[in-house]
Image (cartoon, rainbow, N blue to C red; front, top):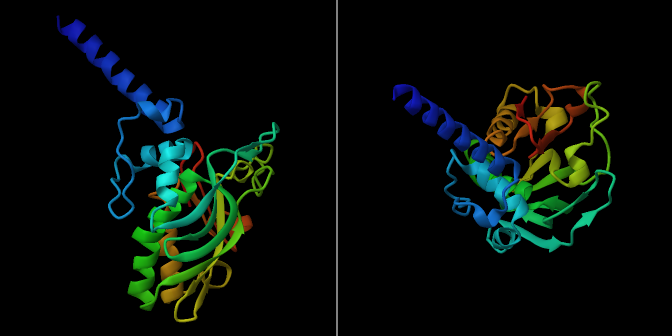
Length: 234
């Protein structure tokens, strides 16, 4: 009897793990998801990654996000080129989290991650350290049909940029006129470097990959954030 109970416990745990992975990877249609919609002001850490993945594939949820006060954007039509490039359920960003950030096309899951990051990490850090809001960010890349750059091992694989599932950010401009540059200020010991390191660490809560100057030379002048299949915070 104990053997039978252990067997069913193992099967049940395996089924739950398989379901969690399926939801995480977007293999289950969003209409079957039991998850609540994201609340930008109060994200639920234990499920936020699944919520963002659902947002990436669910059109109605995406429209709810872009009609909120946290994101100024408009939906763009799907584009699939057949060579591992293109996008689906994307938006054209102009502002996110109170800051200008023009982007021709970015997956809605990334837009949601940016809204969470800006509201819960970037703006609080800017107010605490500089007593000013971030009013714009320098966009250094969103959609680009290309392979991964700066990696000998993964260089033959498509970048997350190829599916509008990544953003590159090079600098932050504050309402008081200061500009905080990743290239210039990352290694500074004062408030500018502290701000950059804090917002980079905070991005790891919402993006699956968060890379900066400590990762490799290709990222010395920007942060790379994406919501691909793997985890990396460096």
